[in-house]
Length: 502
Ligand code: NAD
Image 1 (cartoon, rainbow, N blue to C red):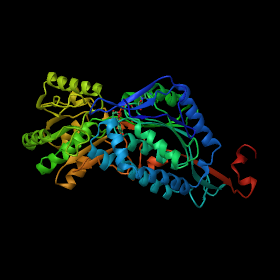
Image 2: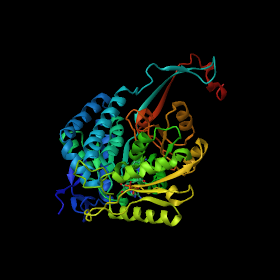
Image 3: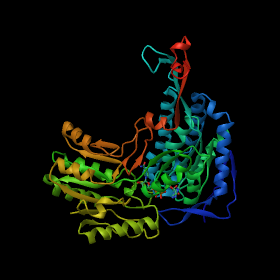
Image 4: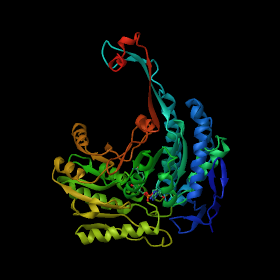
């Protein structure tokens, strides 16, 4: 039996909406239902959009100084900050992260990102300050131009299950700090912390309709994306879903930020310190059981160090503790669902059929049959053309590919439809920077991986998405840039008007 029952959060109220059905989130570690949610309808979604619209068009939020918005949102962070252990448990019971990951990264990281985004927003210049005197023709007519930044309106935010609170903060915080109002649609697999966020908004007395949260699946997601009353959609999820969203969002040409999937490479060059590279690449590939969008799932290793790297990597991966999510000794928890486990096992079988060799065979651990556990699989002998080297598996499956030199490493790294992230492992910084410069990915780390910050723009090239989150460009995505031109031409004859009305 689920232990928590949530409603929808619309116009500042918790409501049952019009839905006749509820659904449950399932703890991936045990298979037990943990919380129950309203399976929102299109009518519920429309009510949430209408509430957000009212809060934008007639409410105080868009015209408040940014410092006041930040201060009010700071109260939400204080409330959440007082509940970190409880929220961490809620998070890992929904999405299968480990207690170590949830308590040290997923929940505190979400609050840290929100604080960093608030810091960035309060330092942002919403106008160009002194007007600039401009004119289309040197010595001709001139005027005074002011450039200002205004909120877009209603933002629809759709998030995945793998970082529910942190990825909600990446969207909700900049959108609201910019003066927009938001309808959040969390993943149906892990919606609890989005509803806890709604509770904190209600407690912090944020004006009604500024944040609305509607739970449900793709149907409410599509209604949000298609709505003509929504001015922007910010989406994080799979590439196929992103493609569908791009089609649906075109009705009113709403703004779109898409943060999608990846097949990120880790490039291990031959002058590397193998022991520390092995540790680092384990983190790159297997954090969150390989279910982080940036996780490296292709490891491209220089032929000179390949065999030693493989031996040490497989031995190290084999020692990882796959176990219960509430145990601090656990390194890898389960994958998110039975369907995800089946998909991952299908890819492991496919890899063998394609001719790769599993030096670590994966499989299900014993004693954890109720949960959706899979042990890490390490393939060698994979080629760049194999499907296991090209498709996003989103699980603890790593393909190690042998490359002759840096040029081949870069060529294989770029031989993909994705371009989200990459890492280069190398002792020579100049060489590492050269290789990093040639890899086509939104973020390239050197001797590290998965390092993200509120100050740094994050996003993908190619089919890993469009637009950026975080950093100044991520914040500006939630603003309209507007020009006001004040005519200062002294006499009519000097006007360009003279071209048509001499
Ligand atoms: P998903 O695409 O299945 O679902 C993401 C969200 O979209 C969910 O809320 C879902 O309900 C909603 N949705 C599904 N169909 C929809 C539709 N037709 N219209 C509107 N909304 C719809 O992805 P997922 O399984 O939750 O997450 C895993 C994927 O997310 C992976 O591909 C991963 O790489 C990607 N991801 C990317 C980033 C990034 O920043 N680039 C971060 C995390 C995850």
